[in-house]
Amino acid sequence: MNLVKVDIADLKITADPDAVLVTYALGSCIAVIVYDPVRKAGGMIHYMLPLSETSPEKAKERPAMFADTGIPLLFHGMYEIGCKKPDLVVKVAGGGALYDDGGRFAIGQRNYTILRKMFWKVGVMIAAEDVGGAKSRTARLFLPGGRCTISSLGEEIEL
Amino acid sequence: MIAKSELLASIKKLPTFSTTVIRLSSVLNDPDASVGEFEAIILPDVALTANLLRIANSAFFALPRRIGSVREAITLLGINRVYELGAMAAVEAVVPARLPGYGIDAAAYWCHSVAVGVLSERLTRDKKLATPALTFTAGLMHDIGKLVISEYLAKVQAALQDEMIGRNKSLIESEREVLGVDHGEIGADIARAWNLPEEVALVAGAHHDPDGVNGGKGDIMVDLVHIADCLAHSLGFGTDIGELHRTLRVAAMERLELKAADLERVASRCIAEIEGLAQFNRAPAQGGPA
Image 1 (cartoon, rainbow over the protein chains, first blue to last red):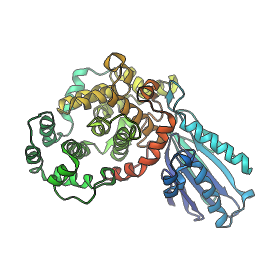
Image 2 (image 1 turned 135 degrees about the vertical axis):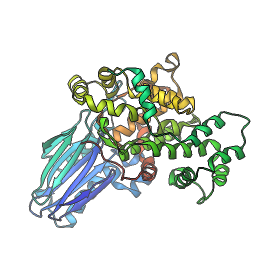
Image 3 (image 1 turned 180 degrees about the vertical axis):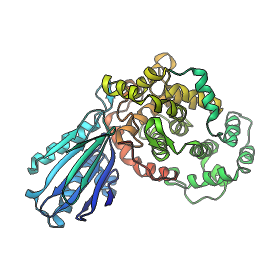
């Protein structure tokens, strides 16, 4: 098993049959997990914020920090290794929220809203998701079969 | 529930906090103290000096060149900043390998502490409001109470989960329910036991309840650290067993005139600095209990 760690504001793509893609501590951040059962390849992004207009210079340095600059890179990276869009199974995890006494701090909600908008525009369907709540999540994608798990407070679910 | 006296006794069981930094704390508050005096306290402590210089050369402190002496550090950064470097090196030395009650290791504790230190200081960078001296240290040390509470919390995990998950209570409220005390209160006690500056004790004690400070008027440093703490947890810097069971007090954001967009901008700009400073712990940064 080769653990491929996806850091915050980072994305990884692999077709290594022994790879397990993993990202930790998804609070309000979101992981998009992509798997191609034909090519037996997987990809994962752990983005932090919705829009690159927040900090265009940082978006250049680390495009995976933002949904709008990072997610297209993830998909293009999959296409570059031979994946086809209709084959991709797309799953989503994260977007959690603190208790907020005034609804001012909705980074997780904003992260999720922009994702839905982007996917709707380009016709990407979400196969499964585990989002929202006061949770911190760890997401794993196991190659070559594409099993995806989400764990939080010691409990693990299959996504 | 734990007796307060037992907790206070536990503070004494923590690894000894740097006597050098305790002495620096007293000089910091003495208007007559000279740069030479300050330097003379640090220099005999070879380990602290080495760590202080290592940290000083990280990206966060943005020095124009690599520095190799305490005198240079004082000249370029000033006494307050060098105190903060010393305090940081000293805290790093007392964090245990694991904090079982919080489900984290030293790396995750350190990652969170550093993230809050950096974010507290940077939150109002684009605003007119000046960040008070020692905000970084107060942010870095806001959770020192966890060093003592952890072992007690480890014994009551089921009850704690019951409060948090079953009753949707925040981590700090849940600690109070099951232990009768929380990591903020005990953190303030530790800060005072270590003779740290009073601001550090105030912030540690009030970082989950910023609205109760100064008879409801609030305090800039407490507000900064409160918001930075929420932001750091939201972004997953050093996630612990409390996950996102924390309450953001919106009044703190209003007092500092901060909006969600400000927080996002600050977060995007600080991530590299946080990662750089987090490396000063032995183990790799990030990672949580899940």
